Image (cartoon, rainbow, N blue to C red; front, top):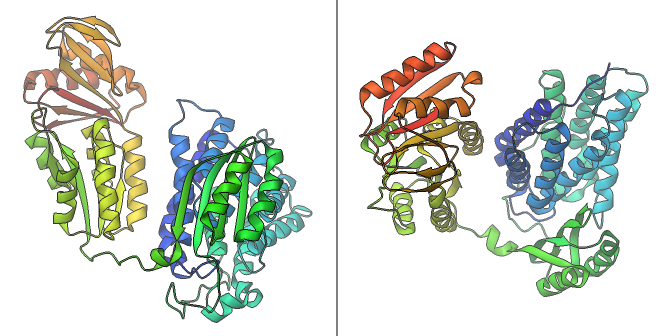
Length: 531
């Protein structure tokens, strides 16, 4: 029974896996005692997969399955964080080297081949493999898949068996690794891998994981407590551009400097992770081998001693230009941060709004391309103070409205951030404005008074009628496949204009629901959104 990989299936799995890692993040962080008890294994696994999904989101329209797999792999490689994130990335990369050759259909044997390739690649990437860790869990899954493939024709069943074997192997990790047994936990990295494998099994079969005896014990030591192990003081990570044949020499240079050495990649781009006391020597080894960049150094003592966040709940701060949009933002549970052409925002204003909220979880919606760097700067200061902050790269206010609509205050922070990001990213947006002077646009020359249509941030249409231009914008935003159109009217938009646009949409696309919102914004008589 063949199983095909297509763009939609792979994209859906990547997002499902990221959401499940978000849900399990705090649990995995809590059991993190190896290689360093710094309570970040779940966080690193989650953000590694976020990087993969972001790379998929950056693809142009209608990508092929190979495009999506390649983008996801590159995102994991570039965005891998920490020991666990780096090994997880290599496990996925190893499996994709097999899967990308099986687009015509996956057999049971292909599933086994992919899991074996993943396990082999991960062991090869780690300088000193330690049993009772994520590596053991991966090897157990691969072995079970191979055994199942010898008698089972259904690749879904083979993967289900492999995921079950991984859960059972996870439960046994304390018996294989004394440090885990002393702490009373299973391996955190192995737990993250089980989340990934369970996500694949669920995507393939539609069934939740079969209950097993693999329980996750509560740690009997505080995260960061001294477990009596002497180890290096710093985590060093960097990306490296170099010929593949230079990597063995790099490994030889880094191996004596510390532990937890993991080097993944290929075809000229590598991700290097190592724990050392001599940071300079680790970076110099990279320079000798090629061109290191995105160098990151973490002092474990400072990371463990980082102050706890305040306990002030969650706030969503959204930049808005009109009182109508501000009211909508507040009604949806957000905090409106006003700006206008004559009153631009500053980093200090954004930082002050975050601080005044007293929240320990902050979601920022910049709603303008020029705001994103400013909001990131304010977010950095808030993170240093102990808050968890996410900046969603929204560039227009209709994206923020869509993101706010899916926010659920009862769900975990990371789950909410993923859901809001997906909602904002899926919103096709446009606008209508009036040229105030003669000029040149992407659509050609325009004269003062011309009606300009904006499609996904670019001036794309020049016309004389707001109704005609707005409808053309909606068509370019793929009105035919839409389920809902939102019209946000500005203070210079005649109500009759929005009514005519809505009537035309319902005439030409009767399957589409139309919602009109009074935004009362300036500059743009109309904001348009297609979902």
